[in-house]
Amino acid sequence: MEQELALFYFLVLGFGVLMYVILDGFDLGLGVLYPWLDDDSERDTVMRSISHVWDGNETWLVFGGVVLFAAFPTAYAHLLSSLYVPLVLMLFGLILRGVAFEYRFKSVRSRRLWDAAFFGGSTLAAMCQGMVLGAVVQGGDMVGEMFVLHWFTPFTIFTGLSVVAGYALLGSCYLVLKTRGDLLMRAARLGRRLVVVMMVSLVIVSLWMLYSNEWVRTRWLEGLNALYLLPMPVLSAVFGFWLYRALDGNECGARPFWLAVGLFVMGFVGLVAGLFPFLLPHQMTLWELHAPESSLWFTLPGVLIFLPLVLAYTLWGYRIFAGKVEDFEEGY
Image (cartoon, rainbow, N blue to C red; front, side, top):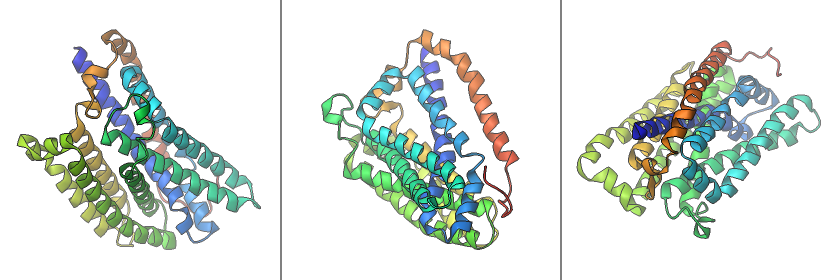
C-alpha cells in the first residue's frame, strides 16, 4: 500500500503543478504581452479580465509546494537548496507584479512605472519557472556545491525563454476568449506567431534532451516505450496545427484557449511520461523519496478535503466571471 500511496501523491502533485501552469500561465502571459498592447484602454481591459481571478490562480502553486513538502520531503529539500536563486527570483517577480497590479488601479502619474513593473515581474517569474523546469529535466547531481549554478546553462536559458513564449501564447488565447474588437484581432495575430514559436521551441527542447541525455533517449526511442509515447508528440503537433487554424482573427470563442490548454497538457504529460518514475531525474525515484507511510496516511485526509475544495472554488470563480470583458466594468 505504501507504493500506491506514493503514486497517488505523485499524481496529485502533477495535477497541482499542471493547474498552476495553465491558470497562472495565461495570467503571467498577459503581463508578458503588455508592451504589445496599443494603449491604456487595452491595458485596462487586460487588467479587468483577470482582476477577479489572478490571485486565486496562485493558490495552485502553494498547493503543489505543500504536497511536495508533505509527501516527498527529501525531494523538496534537494530542489529548494539547489534552486534557491531562481525560485527566490520567481517569488520576487510574483510579488512585483502583484504590487504593480494593485497600484496601477490607484495611480495616475506613475502608471507607466507600474506597467513596466507588471511586465517585468511577469516575465521574470515566467523565465525563472522555465529555468527551474530546465534544471530539473537536465538532471545531474542535485546535491552539494556542484549544483549551485546548474540551473544557469544554455539549456535552462532556452527552456526559460520557451516558457515565456508559451505563457504569452496562453495569454493571447485568453484575450481572444475574453475580449472583442481590435484587441481580439491583435491577440489573435500575436497568438498565431506564438504558436509557431512554441512548436519550434518544443521540437528544439525535445531534440536537445534526446541528444544530451541517454536516459531520455532510451526511454523515447527503444522498445515498446517508443510505441506508447509516440502519440504524445503527434497529438502535440495536431493541437498546434488546430490552434494556428483557430486563431483566424474572427469571433472564434473559446476554441483557441482550450486548444492551447490541450497543447500544454500534452507537453506536460509527455514530460512526465518520459521521466517517470524519477522525481529527481536520473537519480532517485518517487519510491525512494516519499515520506514514511505513516506520514502519507496522516496527510491523506487533508489532501482529500482540500483538493476538491480548491478545485470547486476555482471552477466556481471562473463560472461567475465567465463571458467577455465589457468597457464599462471597473477595476477592483
